Image: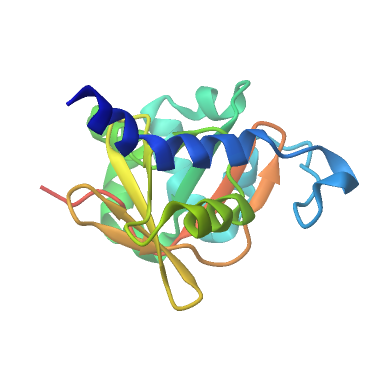
Length: 181
């Protein structure tokens, strides 16, 4: 039983190693050099992520996104959050806001190239990563798109360009990776 669990974690470890093995600056190949911004600033500066920025502020986790990291935030765009995002941006739902945000954050700085490499070496079942909310995200390919699926079945696709910043990576996603209860 123990060996089965270790083998089940192999794709996760491969993804982490790919992310950690990246080098800085021009030697990184296709990976852009990180900006001096933090995750919190990058999310706040992106017009299509301003609802998520409000959720981060009201949850109290914006300090984490300003901190050392590195983290990768799978950032739902405004259209994905819809009106629920506006409701979560208030102080009354602070715990729910924090839970939503933690479900979209994984440890480490993962670029799309890192995820693509892990998918190439990880097999047809995809690659899994554990979130800060202790949930599992599964990454798969659908054509050229990278699809992220949460354990509860919520899905999203990585959209637009990622932003590599001083303490991680912002990966815009077109869905919320937690189903509403």
